Picture 1 (tube, rainbow, N blue to C red):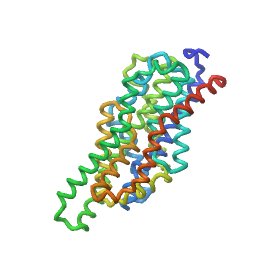
Picture 2: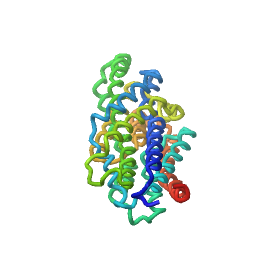
Picture 3: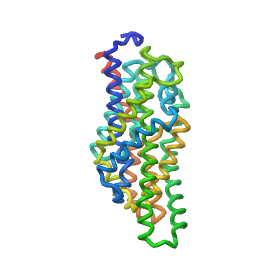
Length: 336
């Protein structure tokens, strides 16, 4: 069917699939928000997911929609996207999320979505229709965000260690059990602010492609913003428990002071990326921060083999989701 004449039911179906992806993003990435605060014993798992979900949604009132604009207008040239491209992109991203969740691997929902868009677009029109600047800055931050998280996490740990060098371990633990609630809320705020906007962007892309929104609109429809923030918050409430153990215990053992430093370093990275309109991986960010915290204590405190396996998952995320998206694109041509 012609893109401009796409049936309403197709658009509604794709919006629902996008919200499912958003829900799974929260479900898959809940570990990023709660792993440190659970593994340090500051909050029980049930309390932690409610806490994180609340701040995921509150991010709606904090951040501008810069990331949504990048996804909606900065990855692909206008006029290329249609319902088949969106379907392929979502199927590619969701498939990769399910596989990595099943095996307990902290991968990036963000880069799975970018990979899905790229794969479906290339299947339709080739690589020349991609906007190089948007794709390159996203790919660049696959490396920048964990490095920045590592740097800020380790720097926070050094500052805290020097500041509290005369305090007793018991006093430090008591203080940072309280402060970790602040850092966890900041990280969950950054998680919601960056990740929910990616789904807002893909729905906006769909609405523009099918004529239900205009490329000249400064913002997407309000219902897309509210529904996407609600979906990611609900996903976080259900939690991706398979990944919590990997993030909170298998990379390095964390105490409340370490959890605070990791979350604060990760939150600062997410705030910066969201302000710049760059879709980054919350998984990459918090993993880098956790490794940074562990490495400041002792390089041997980090289980580098586990961290290495995670890095391999990062490397394969975009090509794997792009391949599945390309296949899904061709299949969709026979369905819609």
